[in-house]
Length: 133
Image (cartoon, rainbow, N blue to C red; front, side, top):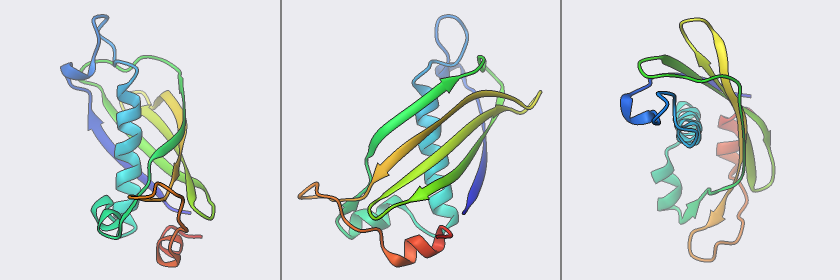
């Protein structure tokens, strides 16, 4: 299965009043990782939408290990755990680059659905093959 690694800097706007990354931003970074692993495989969210398909998150989990702070460089490591009939489970590790410490880990389950009916739809063979399954 594919793996993608993306680096980002923590900006002031990412932090809360305590000077650490606001918890919901990790979910935003999960989306960055998910977008980049799909892009690496040759797919873009716009490609799916043009076909009338979207892939909303139906399940999310995040374990916070230690805080990331303003100006840290973080690495988002994204892997694919499972590709089902109509869903993909993505795993994420957020690592602080300066000391290689894990700051958060989690996963999302995304289900491919018809944009109009919101009913699940089969993942295409070309996407499945591009993602290594």
